[in-house]
Image 1: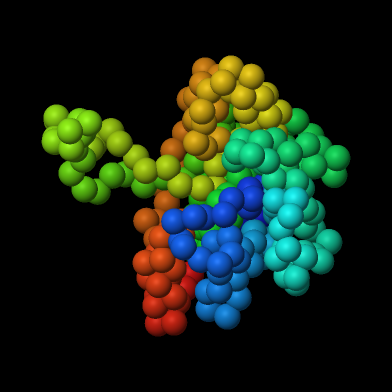
Image 2 (image 1 turned 90 degrees about the vertical axis):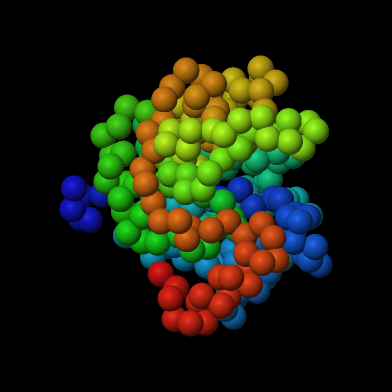
Length: 238
């Protein structure tokens, strides 16, 4: 599929978390990186794409940072209320997309607010490979290191076969209606879902993995931010 044939898509960015492991004075998505905040770089990954139909950022009700960003005034970007958990935020974002005219059959990409190094070629590959998929899927990378299962006593109980293990990244790409229904059912069932794919899995679907680049890093700890800063300053930003 050529770039001109890539499907139109909507985006939801859950950005209501505080990122306590960063030990910073503000939510991690607002920390500075290469002259701007992380969230601005994250949005750029999508705002530069011609197939974007619209984008919703889900922020906490008391968020005092979002309104100060230039991208908050972009006509393609809407704000939605963040929820207590990630899935609550995403559901609020999907409701906002529906109000903007998104249909149940439209593709929605959910992406982490603190994952600013998404490569354009990875985004295009995800869109192309899943365009006709009945379920959808996610960017992921195969496990590289030896994996150990560890007991409560801190000792290794077994070595896990890494050949069947993949590390889940974002964006995760699903039809609006299927994603909404799966997340709502998981919430109603009291199931803890850590990403959108796990909600689809719980609903009986099998999302497809699309291999992406390993440097699609989620900023979780101070050393992650330092690594990206160093990489970008060296001129290696995607």
